[in-house]
Length: 316
Image 1 (spheres, rainbow, N blue to C red):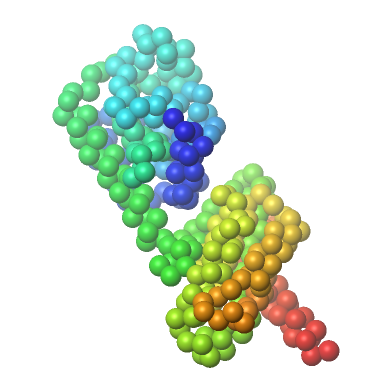
Image 2: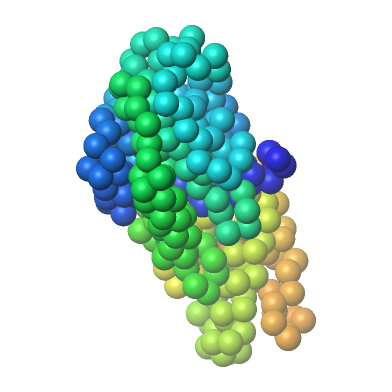
């Protein structure tokens, strides 16, 4: 198994550490009711952990990959069945078996992306030994395909069709999650708002076709420089936003120098002489940043300061 490619396939969904969603919770509830199990989960497996996008009967949101049953389940495409974990040499000493949540039987169906990578599992868990009949396994197979369909649908709906950036609402969800992580773990993050100097004039002069291509090219330039852990969204006509997790405003500013160079030296459409320049507003999260709108307001304030400074320099 190409683990690097598998992790890349998982990261493309940009779903790790996101908030619960009804579309996934509905599936785990169906599993719990139909299979009559106390524990069900949609588990996604990254480099070091399994993280639960949806869960019933579990108090934790993740476990280490070393103890995860799902880490075994993604090793092949067949259903992974454990009827009695206490007598299974692979799991009888597992802390998830000997302690909470006291796993005794497990059925896991790999979640296989359209390009063939197993990104996680849909699993049904019981606290007593049991067999899972063919009908239950067949149902789980169908539901696992539904999970993947929802992952794909979520990715398409949350993307701006022109630029491929996250929509405003999807990006705001990522910002909300970054705030939650900071308040719990104090991991720094930086929010950047970005607009394009004189875009309206250029769009009016050269037309919407060139304007749209310019926006696509800007999006490609930004995406090219970002890390997999960063988020990029389109929040308005020519307005974008970047969320950089785990870095300070100073570190973000250095990364944005690369973004500026790519945008300012880019060739857009069929007009060689057409040039565009970005403005950035940079705001690092702080203890006072307890809401999405506050963080955006801080970044917008910095953007206005940047633009006034730019006008002042050009007039001097």
